[in-house]
Length: 330
Image (tube, rainbow, N blue to C red; front, side, top):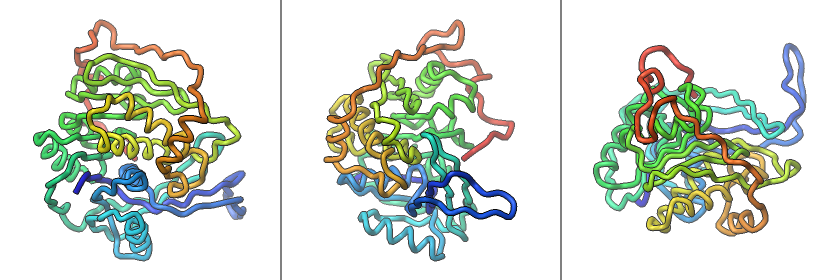
């Protein structure tokens, strides 16, 4: 085992259509794609496509969609360790105008405990917060063993606050900032307060703010992919995660700026194609994207902090508290 990814698996149906019918109406999509889906799952496939097939703990059902998912993983030589559910999960995705509307049908009522694996040789763990008990279990083990632990913080989960204590590299979406009522700058402060050595907030076409072990905050512009080339942005963030994990595994001594620039080019390639599988880049695709697309001309966003806080201080409990009232999870 060279790496372990943990997440909820989906079968994604992505389609291009002018509108979603309502009532007693029908419409025909112009184009569609069927592929694997799920945050950490798609990241695992991206890592495998680039040359390192990680082990994957994921939800799997004994139905025809589950068997389809197993076949997809076999194609990429990804060893799947099943967390059994009754029904496979589905996503219906409609990209349009650089955004995407999603309907998820999810079964996360697991029939059995998560599998216990031998982590000999493992050099990286990537989780998205789903399969919460497994994510915490393996994050603690890998953190204590000095293995890179990476989090895709795409949204607020039941275990986010606890999980971050065992995460070395936390790359979160702007949506998590919104759910926690933090600015991107405040989020970086919060990630440092949880002990994350590397932290980042991705903001789509507006780039990314981040820090590394030096604690220096930086801004990385997005690559400028012309609007007429953008087809499907869904999954681009997941591919970003899979690509930087791959880059780390290939050269762990390289600076994180290099890993993130590699991943940025992977995402720039991905958004030009429909569906997750068609979006997966090869090394040649990433080199081409790096050469073809220049950085957007952007001004670094203000890294606002909670008033009165230094960079190394924790946000107030009102900002960091995640227990209690039910919050939206995806």
